[in-house]
Image 1 (cartoon, rainbow, N blue to C red):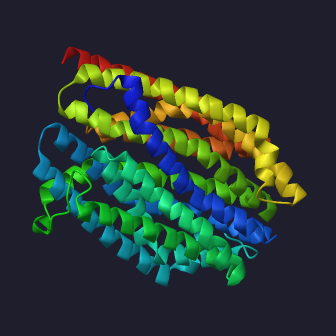
Image 2 (cartoon, rainbow, N blue to C red):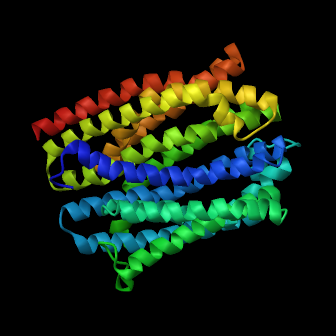
Length: 438
């Protein structure tokens, strides 16, 4: 946190988180792979249409996973351990309450949600089935994401990564059992996902309860604190609004893609799952840097903060360029892992090669957003997201689709990300100048 060289600090904190997040996204890839073996493109499309439900869960859990984690890191940097432990316990309580709320939504509103997600007659049954199971098990999915973030906020990236790996391995084992052996098909994939997340949550609770973490879950701190709640919400709510805007953009994208048919939706789903590996690498590296930046900001070490930002941008950009080169060469083979349908294979390959064009730009933008969340200035992070999703991406989707059809639809995001990079760099420059004067 204090003495490691900036590049090595970024690598030590960022790469384990990136690896852990890759295991998180493997949940969806594993589901996509095994559902694809059913040779039913509409079940494959249903799993893709339900993906925004997972994004909503991650968005809500991000209130704790980012808001509480940011406050914990700043408290630890300032030597306020008791306040950090009170924040930790309140974060657990908030995830439990949100999980119960989402489960109720799964009981009463699955049908309307499936239609909102873009399901048509041929994909409605698969979408609603997958969505219902995910919502009923939402506490475990949300807890896996949030509790892993809380462990990372104190620097325990190893435990966080192990927890994610355990859940993913369990999902890989359980998927074929529930999908094929028990004959539950797409419902079995959702059940396996929930059970994998549940194993991760059990592991995280055990780490905190056994004293292996720096912070402890102390029952004496149970209860509600408005002071801590406000600190969590200060960072957590803008971050969650970012996720909701991303979800809204995906809903627009899915509904536009649905006009091209279920096979196109299936192809787009495969492409998005493969791309999520590249996306979670940069998100993991930048998330791993957030405790570093929050700790040094809390300690008033602004010079090291600037060094960490520069090192983080360098590392994440180089890594993403490597991922881009690999995807460009391997696109047909990667898509072919998930489908044997020639139409889905051709469309998925074209879609993946268009999507990878975002990779040179997104790492820097994500690093800047995470810096603002780390130092308790979430509205700056949110302003970047407003530009990215609301002012650029959604209008670009509508405009490009109208002018160039499906080709325009899949190239809207690269164009948006290039422009958003300029906004992010401008804000970063202004902020670093302010720190230089402090």
